[in-house]
Length: 160
Image (tube, rainbow, N blue to C red; front, top):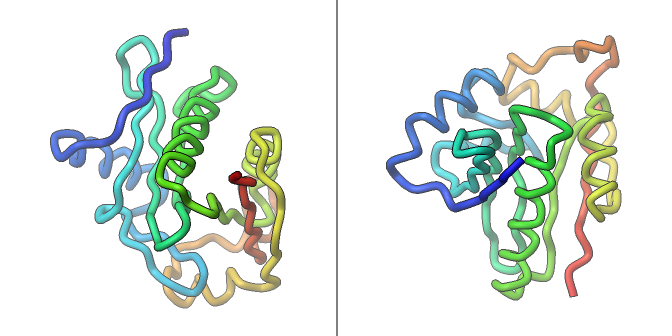
């Protein structure tokens, strides 16, 4: 499968936001006790055989890049890994000291994926999702697997 990754541009925005809204229940993400409007973030798009196949939205602070969302439309085909490789290179090129992501305790697939791609668990915020639900009440109590969603887990990629 031929996978190409590029930065999102204004022409892509409407389609990307529609896609993300259908996957995340809107354009607002609640993490770290704050509400993040993903429509205001830059992103990376992955195309497999010239078809949009993955989206990574991120935000930049002084010394770090933070992955806010990562979606691969066809899992286990290298799309998510291609997006990760691109964001790692961006972080290195920009001389960032950290590349980080936060997920929840129920998202075992993401925990496996990020660790397989070189990320390390650096913090667990117990019961943090209770605070996130105050910001975004639509966050479910349990995952589709029946796991209670209650903790935020931070992962960092070791940059040189």
